[in-house]
Length: 201
Image 1 (cartoon, one colour):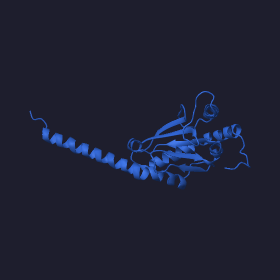
Image 2: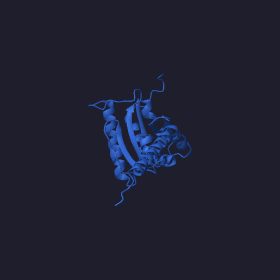
Image 3: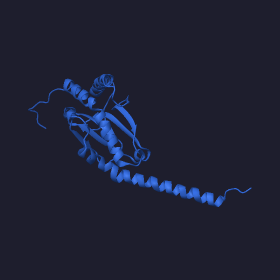
Image 4: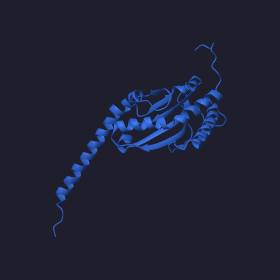
Protein backbone atom coordinates (compact mmCIF):
# COMPACT_ATOMS: atom_id res chain seq x y z
CA UNK A 1 0.00 0.00 0.00
CA UNK A 2 1.55 3.22 -1.14
CA UNK A 3 1.07 6.35 1.01
CA UNK A 4 1.80 9.98 0.12
CA UNK A 5 5.41 11.02 -0.09
CA UNK A 6 5.98 12.75 3.24
CA UNK A 7 8.68 15.04 1.84
CA UNK A 8 6.42 16.20 -1.04
CA UNK A 9 3.50 16.70 1.29
CA UNK A 10 5.60 18.75 3.71
CA UNK A 11 6.97 20.84 0.85
CA UNK A 12 3.44 21.46 -0.46
CA UNK A 13 2.16 22.69 2.91
CA UNK A 14 5.27 24.80 3.46
CA UNK A 15 4.81 26.48 0.06
CA UNK A 16 1.12 26.98 0.82
CA UNK A 17 1.91 28.68 4.13
CA UNK A 18 4.45 30.94 2.43
CA UNK A 19 1.83 31.98 -0.15
CA UNK A 20 -0.77 32.65 2.56
CA UNK A 21 1.74 34.73 4.55
CA UNK A 22 2.74 36.67 1.42
CA UNK A 23 -0.91 37.38 0.64
CA UNK A 24 -1.57 38.56 4.20
CA UNK A 25 1.49 40.80 4.07
CA UNK A 26 0.38 42.27 0.73
CA UNK A 27 -3.13 42.97 2.01
CA UNK A 28 -1.74 44.52 5.20
CA UNK A 29 0.52 46.77 3.13
CA UNK A 30 -2.43 47.70 0.91
CA UNK A 31 -4.45 48.67 3.99
CA UNK A 32 -1.66 50.80 5.48
CA UNK A 33 -0.52 52.50 2.27
CA UNK A 34 -3.76 52.82 0.29
CA UNK A 35 -6.96 52.09 2.23
CA UNK A 36 -6.13 54.29 5.23
CA UNK A 37 -5.41 57.25 2.97
CA UNK A 38 -7.81 56.96 0.04
CA UNK A 39 -11.11 56.43 1.86
CA UNK A 40 -11.38 60.18 2.54
CA UNK A 41 -10.70 61.11 -1.10
CA UNK A 42 -13.29 58.56 -2.21
CA UNK A 43 -15.93 60.10 0.06
CA UNK A 44 -15.14 63.58 -1.24
CA UNK A 45 -15.53 62.37 -4.83
CA UNK A 46 -18.60 60.20 -4.08
CA UNK A 47 -20.27 61.63 -0.97
CA UNK A 48 -22.95 59.77 0.96
CA UNK A 49 -26.49 60.10 -0.36
CA UNK A 50 -28.64 62.82 1.17
CA UNK A 51 -28.57 66.56 1.58
CA UNK A 52 -25.81 66.74 4.19
CA UNK A 53 -22.23 67.92 3.71
CA UNK A 54 -19.60 65.67 5.33
CA UNK A 55 -16.10 66.17 6.74
CA UNK A 56 -13.59 63.30 6.60
CA UNK A 57 -10.98 63.34 9.38
CA UNK A 58 -7.95 61.25 10.45
CA UNK A 59 -6.96 60.02 7.01
CA UNK A 60 -3.82 57.85 7.15
CA UNK A 61 -4.65 56.15 10.46
CA UNK A 62 -6.16 52.80 11.45
CA UNK A 63 -9.36 54.67 12.22
CA UNK A 64 -11.23 57.39 10.41
CA UNK A 65 -13.81 59.91 11.54
CA UNK A 66 -16.62 61.26 9.39
CA UNK A 67 -18.91 63.96 10.66
CA UNK A 68 -21.73 65.88 9.01
CA UNK A 69 -21.55 69.67 8.98
CA UNK A 70 -24.94 69.63 10.71
CA UNK A 71 -23.21 68.57 13.95
CA UNK A 72 -20.72 71.44 14.11
CA UNK A 73 -22.81 73.07 16.82
CA UNK A 74 -21.84 70.21 19.12
CA UNK A 75 -18.14 70.73 18.45
CA UNK A 76 -18.53 74.45 19.11
CA UNK A 77 -19.86 73.50 22.57
CA UNK A 78 -17.10 70.98 23.29
CA UNK A 79 -18.90 67.80 22.15
CA UNK A 80 -17.30 65.72 19.41
CA UNK A 81 -19.99 63.67 17.66
CA UNK A 82 -18.82 61.64 14.68
CA UNK A 83 -19.03 58.33 12.87
CA UNK A 84 -15.89 56.24 13.19
CA UNK A 85 -14.69 53.37 11.01
CA UNK A 86 -11.62 51.15 11.05
CA UNK A 87 -9.64 50.70 7.80
CA UNK A 88 -7.23 48.17 9.29
CA UNK A 89 -5.34 45.28 7.67
CA UNK A 90 -7.54 42.84 9.60
CA UNK A 91 -10.73 44.46 8.30
CA UNK A 92 -9.46 44.39 4.71
CA UNK A 93 -8.25 40.78 5.00
CA UNK A 94 -11.55 39.55 6.42
CA UNK A 95 -13.96 41.83 4.57
CA UNK A 96 -15.43 43.06 7.85
CA UNK A 97 -16.70 46.62 8.07
CA UNK A 98 -17.69 48.40 11.29
CA UNK A 99 -19.23 51.84 11.70
CA UNK A 100 -19.71 53.40 15.14
CA UNK A 101 -21.34 56.64 16.24
CA UNK A 102 -19.23 58.25 18.96
CA UNK A 103 -19.73 61.04 21.47
CA UNK A 104 -16.39 62.31 22.77
CA UNK A 105 -14.88 65.33 24.46
CA UNK A 106 -14.13 67.83 21.72
CA UNK A 107 -10.88 68.87 23.41
CA UNK A 108 -9.36 65.76 25.00
CA UNK A 109 -11.02 63.00 22.95
CA UNK A 110 -12.50 61.15 25.92
CA UNK A 111 -15.48 62.01 28.09
CA UNK A 112 -16.91 61.30 31.54
CA UNK A 113 -20.19 59.40 31.21
CA UNK A 114 -20.66 58.78 34.93
CA UNK A 115 -23.49 60.04 37.09
CA UNK A 116 -25.03 63.32 36.05
CA UNK A 117 -22.12 64.56 33.95
CA UNK A 118 -23.04 66.70 30.92
CA UNK A 119 -21.84 63.87 28.64
CA UNK A 120 -24.04 61.31 30.38
CA UNK A 121 -27.06 63.60 30.10
CA UNK A 122 -26.45 64.37 26.42
CA UNK A 123 -25.76 60.70 25.70
CA UNK A 124 -29.09 59.71 27.23
CA UNK A 125 -30.99 62.24 25.13
CA UNK A 126 -29.15 61.20 21.96
CA UNK A 127 -29.79 57.47 22.48
CA UNK A 128 -33.51 58.16 23.11
CA UNK A 129 -33.70 60.19 19.88
CA UNK A 130 -31.84 57.54 17.88
CA UNK A 131 -34.06 54.80 19.28
CA UNK A 132 -37.11 56.75 18.15
CA UNK A 133 -35.63 57.15 14.66
CA UNK A 134 -34.87 53.43 14.54
CA UNK A 135 -38.52 52.67 15.32
CA UNK A 136 -39.67 54.99 12.55
CA UNK A 137 -37.29 53.75 9.82
CA UNK A 138 -37.43 50.07 8.86
CA UNK A 139 -34.64 50.52 6.32
CA UNK A 140 -31.90 51.42 8.82
CA UNK A 141 -29.07 48.86 9.02
CA UNK A 142 -29.35 46.33 11.83
CA UNK A 143 -27.12 47.56 14.62
CA UNK A 144 -27.09 47.99 18.37
CA UNK A 145 -26.56 50.64 20.96
CA UNK A 146 -23.20 50.65 22.69
CA UNK A 147 -21.79 51.89 25.97
CA UNK A 148 -19.69 54.88 26.97
CA UNK A 149 -18.62 56.92 23.99
CA UNK A 150 -20.11 54.43 21.49
CA UNK A 151 -23.73 55.38 20.94
CA UNK A 152 -24.41 52.99 18.04
CA UNK A 153 -22.56 50.26 16.17
CA UNK A 154 -23.28 48.43 12.93
CA UNK A 155 -21.28 45.66 11.24
CA UNK A 156 -21.40 44.57 7.62
CA UNK A 157 -19.38 42.64 5.04
CA UNK A 158 -17.59 43.62 1.86
CA UNK A 159 -15.39 41.80 -0.65
CA UNK A 160 -12.19 40.99 1.25
CA UNK A 161 -9.05 42.59 -0.16
CA UNK A 162 -10.99 45.09 -2.30
CA UNK A 163 -10.34 48.69 -1.23
CA UNK A 164 -13.11 50.11 -3.42
CA UNK A 165 -15.58 47.67 -1.84
CA UNK A 166 -14.50 49.04 1.56
CA UNK A 167 -15.00 52.64 0.43
CA UNK A 168 -18.45 51.75 -0.89
CA UNK A 169 -19.33 49.97 2.37
CA UNK A 170 -18.43 53.18 4.21
CA UNK A 171 -20.37 55.42 1.81
CA UNK A 172 -23.43 53.17 1.89
CA UNK A 173 -23.37 52.91 5.70
CA UNK A 174 -23.22 56.70 6.06
CA UNK A 175 -26.00 57.11 3.49
CA UNK A 176 -28.18 54.61 5.34
CA UNK A 177 -27.72 56.54 8.60
CA UNK A 178 -28.91 59.84 7.13
CA UNK A 179 -31.97 59.84 9.48
CA UNK A 180 -29.55 59.77 12.44
CA UNK A 181 -27.91 62.97 11.22
CA UNK A 182 -31.14 64.97 11.48
CA UNK A 183 -32.06 63.40 14.84
CA UNK A 184 -28.68 64.26 16.40
CA UNK A 185 -28.78 67.79 14.95
CA UNK A 186 -32.25 68.31 16.47
CA UNK A 187 -31.03 67.21 19.92
CA UNK A 188 -28.03 69.54 19.66
CA UNK A 189 -30.30 72.45 18.69
CA UNK A 190 -32.64 71.72 21.62
CA UNK A 191 -30.03 71.05 24.29
CA UNK A 192 -27.09 73.33 23.59
CA UNK A 193 -27.14 77.05 24.28
CA UNK A 194 -26.81 79.49 21.43
CA UNK A 195 -23.20 80.67 21.14
CA UNK A 196 -22.52 84.18 22.35
CA UNK A 197 -21.82 86.25 19.20
CA UNK A 198 -19.66 88.65 21.25
CA UNK A 199 -17.56 85.97 22.92
CA UNK A 200 -13.94 85.97 21.77
CA UNK A 201 -11.63 82.98 21.51
